[in-house]
Image 1 (cartoon, chains in turn brown, yellow):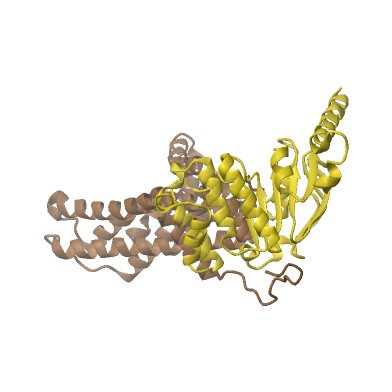
Image 2: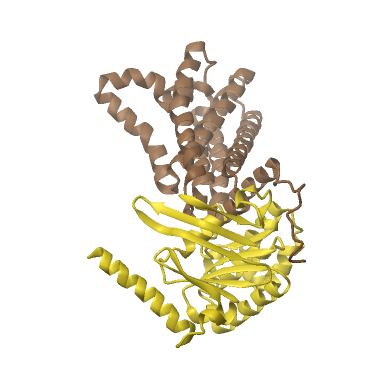
Amino acid sequence: MSALAYRIPADERQPSFSRLTRIELRKMLDTRSGLWASIAVAAISLITVIITAFVKGGQDATLTQLFNNSIQPVAILLPVLGVLLVSSEWSQRTTLTTFTLIPHRGRVLFAKVAAALLLTLAAFAICLVASVLIGELFPAPGGTGALSIVLLAQGLVFLGATMLIGVAFGAAIMVSAPAIVIYLALPTAWDALSSVLAPLKTLSKWLAIGPTLGPLGTRSFSASDWGHAGTTVALWLVLPLIVGVWRFARRDVN
Amino acid sequence: MIEASSLTKRYGERAAVQDVSFTCTPGTVTGFLGPNGAGKSTTLKMLCGLAHPTSGRSTVLGRSYAEIPNPGRHVGVLIDASAAHEGRRGRETLAITAELLGVADTRVDEMLRLVDLDASAARKRVSQYSLGMRQRLGIANALLGDPQLLILDEPANGLDPVGMRWMRGLLRDFAARGGTVLLSSHLLHEVEAIADRVVIIAGGRIVAQGTSTELGAGAGGLEQLFFQLTDAHDRTLEEVSR
């Protein structure tokens, strides 16, 4: 290196977005906690499918039922992965390294969103394969039936939305444990409150995650169903994500 | 080349760093010296975009840090060696940086050899590392992109005397090849042993800067000066608070 002549090449490129996304996936899977959380997601999907095939004489083992049963618990665990994907950088203080290598923090956050969506696809594929496989091996007495494309697509939307809600919570709250606890406890607290306060009950139809998004796996959505799902997503996904983007970009790293 | 001009960082009423200006030139090691809490880390973080200055600006190799497309190829940064993911293996920690920078994976093994972390250490998870090992891993991480400039916050923390001598050799060698080094420390003797230039900070302000020989020229040398300056600052603080 020649000291006086040193120049940053004018044509230097920043690391590509696909490289950043690949690295985010790698970081999710190369630590003990991340790896086990991912294995847990795959395991829970398999276990529920297998249980479904064997309880009640296997009468629930239609493809639709198997698939729905497999995505419901996954939709609870995926957001935990989503939270960790964002918050563990702050908790483990690896942001010190990440942000010195990639000063444009927005790119880091959106690479995390992309990684989260790829993980969602993987989880969706596992649920689908497990349902089809178990449905073939242990068919319901009345036949396994077919799986409608609409329900499949809705299932993917369901998983993607819940995953991104986790990412948004992680970005807004930034500390793993509280973000996970708040994510898991809020719906329960909401249900408890709305059983006491009547006005909340009406609001639930528009804002509670479980009742508005959960049926995505069981019935084909009407326009009003999508309306209810949309307001829920705006409150629990868009709002915390906006807060998260702002905090992620602005916060001093310690 | 690093240039800081009038960097100021306020948290509400309190100024953690005030009007800090200095320059680091190629081929030299600059020691950033000051007691704990004087504003060293905050200043270094502002230099590499981790903290946003309230006012003032800084450039690294002629650009503001955030404008360098792939900064790790030019600037090696180690702000806190303990800030590595506990559950990640040592080698993997470096391999991620290598992938991000776009340098060959073989460079990871070269750097591990350079900082003296053997194959068994490279396989261990960072949670099993001593502070000295983390410091070595952090240095390896900073050097991966074959940078022209190093910014290191308290790099000697946790190193044993042999490790400290090794670090001195490494950084002197880096500067001798034309590189620029800025390292912070609260240990006077460490800075004296390694730095060509010293910038002394106390209470968020630069209180002296110059070559080690210039600053150490007075009676009692650099040590005397350092205590005078930092004590004087503490006394002013006491008077103000009264």
